[in-house]
Length: 195
Image 1: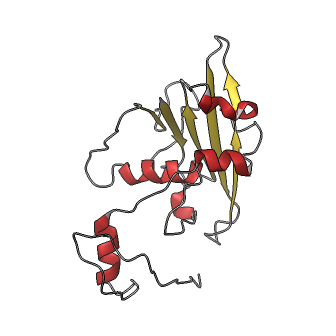
Image 2: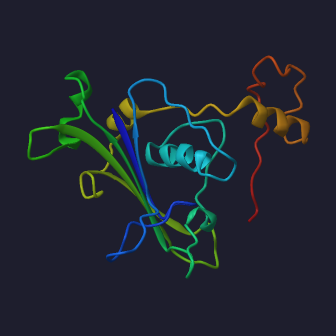
């Protein structure tokens, strides 16, 4: 079983600071089977996927950079930091191979928590962001080493319509081996941002 907690990331706000405050953070439990996200546009489906990508250091064909747009904008101001925690419970003995990274509660239940904390360093420079990824429910545990990252590695597969839109806009590689019923060409032109 997996669990995702997000605070001050995109549309998801913070947990209550005082009595009577609304809880606008995300606390989502995922089943071990397939999970399907359904909803209207701008309701946080992509934010959930991107939160998992950021927390688990997901690999993909595109590079994801955290900007000030990823920090929640509330009624008063933009948040200066956000937190994403992915938790994995009911681990098998084989999945507990990273023993030093696991967390145990008072009842003896063992879980793996990965917490990504991001802080906006300079609001005038949207790409100046500090990111730390550590284990533990509060992000106070050991850092993930290479072996642990390899065990947790996930791959993000972009939607076919996103790849198709990229090619039709002229940002693709120009390869003619693409059709809506096949995968996009793996040869992609690399672009760099000058922002």
